[in-house]
Image 1 (cartoon, rainbow, N blue to C red):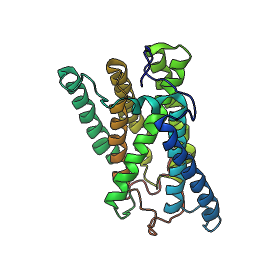
Image 2 (image 1 turned 180 degrees about the vertical axis):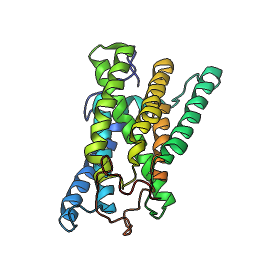
Image 3 (image 1 turned 90 degrees about the horizontal axis):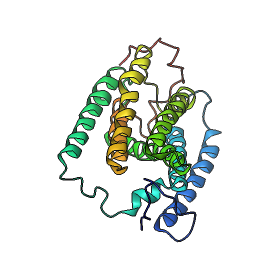
Length: 266
């Protein structure tokens, strides 16, 4: 049951019999299995070559860690506490207009602008696995982002202070994470070099700003998760994220942040 508090997120503690604890036991078990599988399979793969099955294992590990941080910060407890996640908002015209505006922006930003700065090297499109991957990615990463807010809030930063910490924290994490790990070992080659800055300025920054604004105004985190899932389904779709069994995506990993040799290929 949600306690009476002005805070948006609250932590119930660990393994105290709540329903999220039983779910998290499975997450910890899955994380262990994924790590063991990655260690065993990595030794059989050629170094420096993109391997879809390893990409899925690495992504799964990251998603599990996001869920664990969400659980520890109180985000997961809040998301699962209410049987009615949008109390009193469904009929609110301001809420409806805000949701519609954000979804329209994300469609243009991720399904048009981001897609224009992305190439796929003619990878086969696996529709179901791309959508599933994008949804898992968005649901997990949204909880990580919300955890920045929750942790700041737990230190008494208040709503606005927590929102600022979240905005700065997402930026400080997201850039290096993609630059040095995600876009090499998880995501397949997809970045058009000339579009990297445009994606940041016209897609990622306004999206996180709008969705944090939604969180602040409506104090409602569930659709924040939904917004991230919708956006990242688009990203996974247009980069043609490969299925774990795909073999044609096994190519040499290059640094598309500095190498422009194939950035015009489709």
